[in-house]
Length: 330
Image 1 (tube, one colour):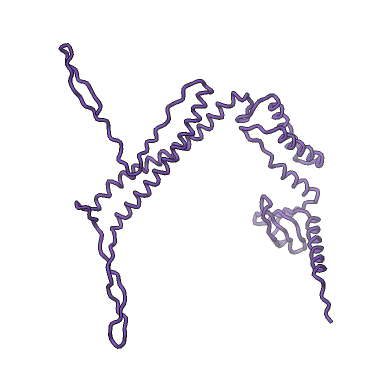
Image 2: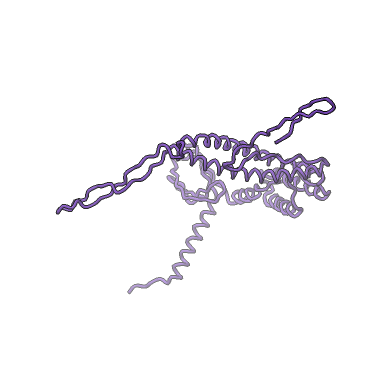
């Protein structure tokens, strides 16, 4: 008679086995294995025999892991961390994410939380080789807290009053926007030049009556019964279709592409120019100077002819016996 193990007992056994495996891996700690090929592996040591070392290897940010078996003959150097060393490394890795932006101060609570985390590390690992760096982080936070208490703000890692920072921050924004506008304006101008050339080429594909040049008729084939008692299918012409001049098709497609590029680029330029003008107005208010005029887009609507030059009309006027020429715009 067969006895079946209840499912809950089997599940509990599997859970216990997994816990034992995890505990065993943790007991071994993290290993650093340098292969003779120069490759360095870091991960949890799962087993260590005379012939093979088995690791669970992690990526640099420890988000991806894989099981790896390495032959002892391929290993040049082998270091195995103790659990205490592994804990210190893990805690320091978490603190290594600390950074302060150069152009923005933080809230007092931000500094207080980081100072507490740094002090906890110093307390837990008083002999750590990283304590000098941790202590420097604490001092930096304390210095910035003093500046904030004095009402100062941060820009380019310098502390100043809010009134001093505003024009500097606006100038930096303006420089960034202008650096985006310049290459975009050149791209739009190049597309406009290409469009002009394509539009000049397009009429050469039509005759004086507007009829396309280079098009030809191509037969369309089908099959039909030959009418014999064998009922063979024969290939016959069932119609015709017009094949357009491929070069004209290419030019027309390029014109459409240029028009789209000019339209999207002109819209992007208008958006950038609006932002640039807004910042220039703010800068003029802080510096008490009139803002410069808005930049010219120099973008004609897609398909529109270029701007016509100004035409002038000259006429003569005689006053008091003196004749002079006067220019008048048309």
